[in-house]
Image (cartoon, rainbow, N blue to C red; front, side, top):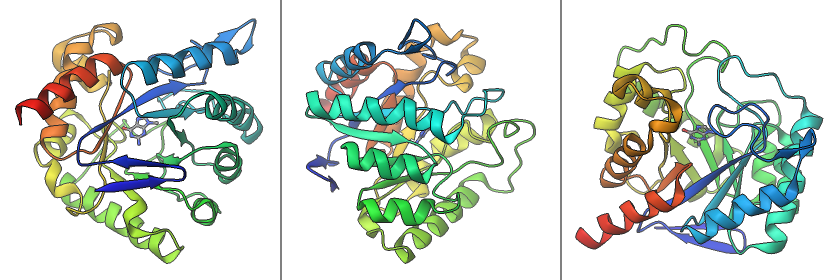
Length: 278
Ligand code: 9MG
């Protein structure tokens, strides 16, 4: 399976590593890492992008909004200011697919014009104008499942059958994307681990990962350093590498094509060995 991302084509016959670059002051794991003197420092952003590429990442995922419960609400202008210059700077210097983690139509449009290759939307293109904006870029889109809203989604997540409900939602978003003019093969499914799910829901989704997408649809999984790992193993956020790697390997074995992670080098090693031994 191939994913055409503008001037790049990703080979999804082996799992691809998507490295996380949060240009937010308050993300749960790396918030504020790229700020100096109160502002976003593009040299620090470029340093992280270079690290992702050197360590084996083929996609850099840039986000300007933290979706962790309790995070500050970001304005459209703040998001544009955090994301678009970073996309532009990375696009000029590195031969890598740039994914923009956004739900905001103007950020999608301006990022695509600046060189982005994937739109990653945790709200699955449900904001007003998002489907149309994404379709106009011609880029692949990642549609993620979330129950509720970031501020309250973990209060009391509730499902009769989490796998069936998540799959039905993603199928419905695929149909909406196709109706808006997005090519079917450019729609990436993502169950949204930790987004309105308790630990049992997350584990059930992981166990039944192959049921979550049609066989010919790209599947993205994000579990890196997430709080589920912290609760299940009693580990602080900086002690979750082993747990993150175990889940990355499990996800790849169960059909994930793109693995979104903080720890690129270690994940790339694990996935390489998995490929060699498979
Ligand atoms: C932005 N973001 C945080 N977690 C994520 C996940 O699991 N998937 C995707 N697509 N994006 C995520």
